[in-house]
Every structure is written in C-alpha cells, then in structure tokens.
Image 1 (tube, one colour):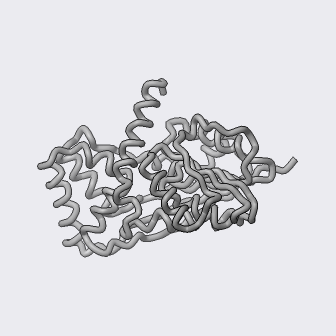
Image 2 (cartoon, helix red, strand yellow; image 1 turned 60 degrees about the vertical axis):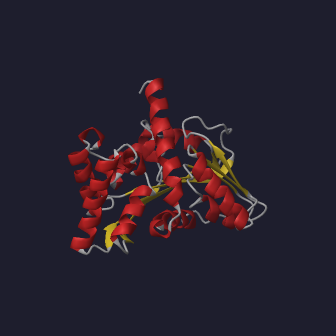
Image 3 (cartoon, one colour; image 1 turned 90 degrees about the horizontal axis):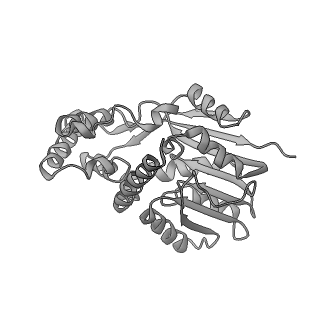
Length: 276
C-alpha cells in the first residue's frame, strides 16, 4: 500500500473512533472491558513490569494492566484516536493509576526502542494494519527476551445475526459504503492467525478460541453498540434520511426477532520471546 493510501486509512480509522468515543464506554458496550481484562489475565503480569498497549482505545486492557503492575510498574497506551485517549486518561486518574500514560501513535511507527517491554498488548487492533505480519514484527521487536506479546482478535460470525442486517441496510441505502468483509475476517480462525504470526517472525505461541455472546438488552442497545464502535465511520457518512432508514431497519430486526444477544467470539494469542 502506498504511503498516501496508508495515511488515508489512518485518518479514516482515527475519525471513526474519535466519533465513536461519545458512546464507546456506554454500558451497552461492555465487551471492550470484558475482553481487555481477559487478555491481561492471560499474561500473569507482576508488580514492577512495563507494558505497551497498542490500539489501546479508552483503556480496556491498559488499565487492568496498570492495576496488575502496580505503582512501581509502567503502562503506555497508544492509539490514533485522541478522544479515546482522553477517556483513558480520565479513568486512570479516577482509579489512581498514575503508572498509566496515554499517547497518540500508530503501530507501524512506534517511537520506542527494541526489547524494552515485559509485555506488548494489542486487543482488536492488529487487523487494522494493511500489512499485519509487518505490524506483528513491530510489536514483537519491542518485547524484551523473556517477555510476552498478547494479541486478541475477533473470531467467526462477528456480532451475528445483527451484523448482517446492518450491512444489508447499508447496501440498500448507500451501496458505495457497503463492505463485503471486515478487516478481522482475514484472521478469524486459528489457521489464518497462525500463518500471520509465522510470517511476522513468531514461531512459538499459544492460540485459544473463546465462544461468547454479547447481550443486547433492547433494540436501542444494538444501535448504541453500532455508534460506539468502528461501525460509526460508516454511519456518519449517511445523509439524514438514509440514516433514519438504516436505524429503523436495525431496531425493527432486533424487536421483531426478539434478539437478546449477538455472537462475540474471540481468539487470544500469547507468545513468549525466548530468554537469552
């Protein structure tokens, strides 16, 4: 991908998630914290360790990491969306986690030396890189010998059956905005994920699949989930009339089907760098 295309992709991602920040931490969107905490739990962090969290969002994994490493540890969260970083900073202050700091940055141009972190984390972010193996190499390079890399990505059937209803409505109203696949579809099964890891230079790793359901308490909760996530980048490009029809189609589906949950399957990766 050319540099100009990369910059455009970064700008789109930043715009989508800056906009989504207004509902990112809404109670309807508990999956961010749920899977962020579960990722950190797999690392068995110890007090005093240092952690880099890339694509940190509003701190769903960075803040649990900061609690785990304690006041003598250090956690640096990096994200493209300044509005999400500000949410993370606010929560860190509220929780007394002065060891957590947050800064704007991109996973392909990290301003950190090699082999300095006890753990590097990327939850629901690696698939945004057009060159995923290249991004893995960048993250792996920052892990010290004996340290760990944790990646979490979406498994199959992301947010189904409601996801398909959303994209069908988009195809009807604004076909130019319709996406035939999501970026995480490239690594939504263990085999493709393992191939990506090997291409990124990681030979030994643990992959664990976890099936899950994210509860949908009401039709409005599903719409809030759409607005508080990456879908926001598509929704904000609709004109007012199209937006109203897409919203109505989604609310009607949830109500008529009496849907009370959507698939939220994830895949965890933990890789430990050999000690010297």
